[in-house]
Image (cartoon, rainbow, N blue to C red; front, top):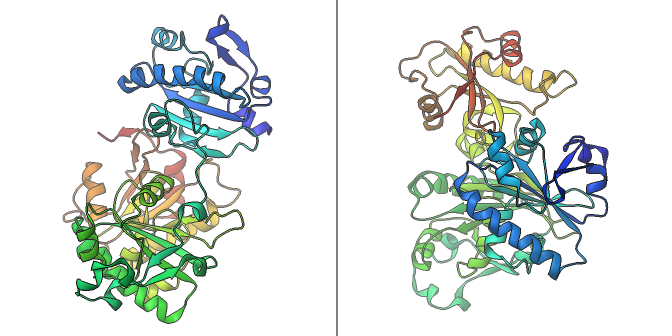
Length: 442
């Protein structure tokens, strides 16, 4: 077990079932095959239902799987000491001390955006098995599938997928009457290729009117220049008729609609919360998995013409760029707004951001300790306007001066506003180091 894994728990854990005795993390996890991190608080109503369920499961697993050595650690986010002790008194597992800063650091590290939240970790190599332990337990309250290790991509993915509908069937519905009429591609031919998964649905207006037509254009142009990738539509449609109608407008492949369980597994693995989402995966590895290159490359598609987009393939997660590419809910980032700036002023904004991202915060000078990202909002787009509204900023329609925001949604929706209107490496660096008053997203 690595020292860094020990360090995140500090010097001591508490055992409520053993008269609040102190246990050293280095001893607590010796020989443990599975470690569950349970983030919760007494003030959280859902935990009052889930904690008793977890306690019952804890005892069931001990009885039914005695060979599987595991431990649960409660990471308290309580604010009141009395409530904290009331919360842990019946817990049969180990607990972090009251108001431990390390609990909050781990909540951020494991992306606990809400509570209760349960992370399941492989005790041998400390890799995360799943961050959706709540769903796993709610669907398996007897722990039959404990520790709920996900299947590999190869195990989930079907042997065949459907070829582009628009090029084969056009608007003809007769060919859909028999599944034998549908042309397919053998998935084994895709193992060495990059794979893009397009989660979308006919009922989604932005998907149908904007993203899908643009994606079809992009796919056709990309295929004319390279053949080391494939794009597959993963339908969130409510019935097969809608799926057929929608798929007929696409130039790329699709997962057969009938494979609803495969769809559910893919949504869970890639944590697809909204559509449209476009996941970028690398070629198949020997272990049957495909590495996630970028959890959502939709922003690339919305930013620039399709010819320029091709040059950025395979679309690694950017350290900087347009706000349309930002995963704002998951990242700590600096946002620069200057929608009404001159071409020269906007070019300067881009150059400053590029310099910061590539020369400062990706080097030894990154004293912030976080993987800071940098984004600009220089056009009157939907995302920039929405962020301005949420942060109570002046509308881009009337704002003529640059605005600088440090946004940290993973930290309970925090953000900071700079009064600086001069955009430079120095002004942004100083703002990051001393951001000033913390504001909270409502």
